[in-house]
Image 1 (cartoon, rainbow, N blue to C red):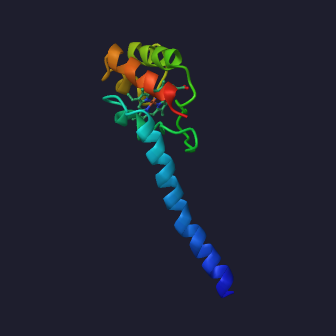
Image 2 (cartoon, helix red, strand yellow):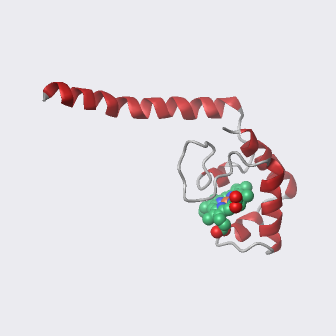
Length: 104
Ligand code: HEC
């Protein structure tokens, strides 16, 4: 009983340590461009993070830019992205899209 408990306790301690190391190495690889943190609260910058919001990591930059252009123009239905896309210039959107495309 006590052996099983302490094994569980060791696992509970190791989970946050490993996730901090994974997030740390992802961030160290490529610094996020201006504005990217406005996206990463909803779109995780890491393919290993589960999310009900469409995943941007793994998409080509051109696809992210095309979606943002369509949201901005009101050509693509959205709940929030039409409003968010209007707050970013084409250059900012391109930099954020390039950054997401480089994440794993
Ligand atoms: C409040 C949460 C939230 C934030 C912040 C946010 N998004 Fe989104 N995003 C969504 C949701 C939800 C959708 C699905 C479309 C909708 O309902 O608006 C989406 C869809 C998208 C899509 C289409 C992806 C696909 O595969 O269909 C792109 C591209 C995108 N967002 C880019 C961005 C970028 C770039 C930013 C930062 C400038 C950003 N989003 C910030 C919630 C968010």
